[in-house]
Image (cartoon, rainbow over all chains, first blue to last red; front, side):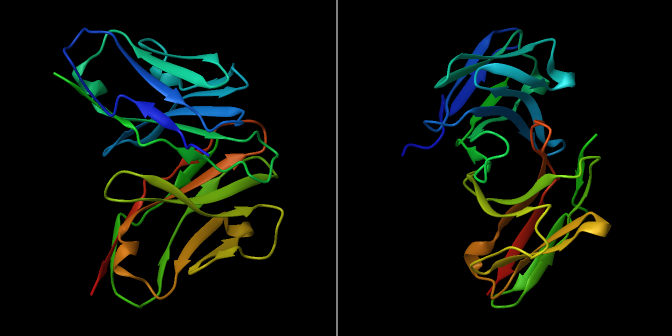
Amino acid sequence: DAGVTQTPRHEVAEKGQTIILKCEPVSGHNDLFWYRQTKIQGLELLSYFRSKSLMEDGGAFKDRFKAEMLNSSFSTLKIQPTEPKDSAVYLCASSLAMGASQNTLYFGAGTRLSVL
Amino acid sequence: AQKVTQTQTSISVMEKTTVTMDCVYETRDSSYFLFWYKQTASGEIVFLIRQDSYKKENATEGHYSLNFQKPKSSIGLIITATQIEDSAVYFCAMREFNNNAPRFGAGTKLSVKP
């Protein structure tokens, strides 16, 4: 089975631009997560979806960050407008639903975003 | 609110020795799941081992094992017979049963020296 696929792997944006990151979860997984990873803050939750419904939205990220699940096998994360402090690695992960014995997260390779 | 704390920023050990990494957590849920993940130098994050809160027996997986002390809200990761390729950053995570997303600790960087 294919794992979690994230595109692009690298993105360079000018301050103020809009960027869209993409994620395809593991086939059959119900839960999808977006995290941001930086050296200072570590892994921070951006959004959590279950079967396309938004379950949790990272409070600090609501104004310029918007994640969507267009269907059960595709999600996007839009950052609009970008700021230099958004430079980080953005990770997508998926899992089977809570309560399942296999609710372990599977991570994508991440998108490294640099905002100039 | 759930919180996961890893106080060890980095650890250095000699190859073939045993290392323990600490993790404490906070939760109001009576049921939860605890995980350890490894992030390699390439950035890849992989699952290592898990402990379900209702299980009293410590989980083991290959040369990884857990020291689950529920009264102390502690879940330590033990790696025996360390190898050079165990050098990585190790993250502890907790997922509550009430449909919240997992929260991660800050990570512990392990360096295994020959």
